[in-house]
Structures are given as structure tokens and as C-alpha cells.
Image 1 (cartoon, helix red, strand yellow):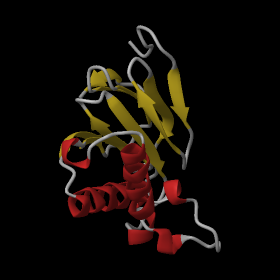
Image 2 (cartoon, one colour):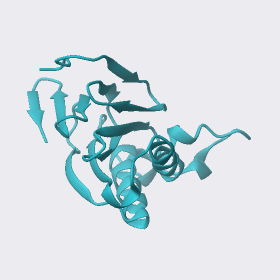
Image 3 (cartoon, helix red, strand yellow):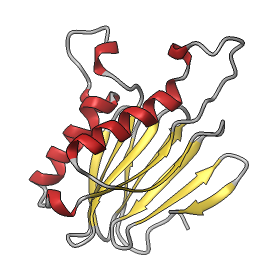
Image 4 (cartoon, one colour):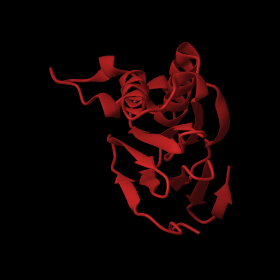
Length: 167
């Protein structure tokens, strides 16, 4: 289920991004409030995945920004990487997962809504870039591991205590 028929698994860590071509698959784990964004070109059988931690790079406290860490910079950087690898922008589609509200707070302060804010920020960037969002598995309060197969364009999602689903 979570293993490729052939090829290797390209693993993407927190605040990282990478690209995979069929027959390889691409995976990330540890999606709590983070959002996994998959951009893919079905014709070229290529996909990229960015593991977004925070909604906006203006939240960075350092001079040098890890572009993959933020929705506003990570999705755009992933797009650029896919174009270099041969994907066509007009064929790109997106699937996303994650954005859980991992902890309950007594006050619903906006700053503590990281998961929902990440999802909103990712959707905003996809809209700005003109990339259609085909499917999503977001929200809730459970962590997820996702794996995308560029050969089938299927996103497998393992949710803590809820098993595996596919979008």
C-alpha cells in the first residue's frame, strides 16, 4: 500500500521539498498542523511535494529563509523546481493533506490556528498560480503520512488511528 511497485521512495522531511518521477513515489510524514502539497503533471508522470510548516514567510525570524518552510514561498519554489524538471505549468494539478489542529487551546487565538491557517495560505497560493486543487484531506486533529505515486496520480494518506485512505 505504502510501497512502490518498483522504483524508490523519495522522502521529504519537515520544511523540505523534492521531486519524483515514475516509477518512484514521494512521501512525507509528520503532517500535524503542517500541510503536504503535491503538484503533479499526469502526462509527464512527475510530481513534487513540499512539507509546509507555516503560512507566511514574514513570520521568519532569520535573515535567510528556508523557502520550503512557508506556504507563500514553498509552493512557488516547488513549481519552479517542477518546471526545471520538465513539467508543464498548464498541466499541473494539486492535492493537499494535513493542516490539523493538533492541540486544543482555551482561547481560540488566531496565532494558535496554525493548521487551518496553513491550509488557507496554501489554497491562496495555488489560486494565485492558477493551479487547480483536485483533492484534499485537511483539518481534524490527527497526524498524517502521505505518499504520492506519479504513475497513477493517487495520494495515499495514513491518518493516525484512522487507517489509510486515497484521494
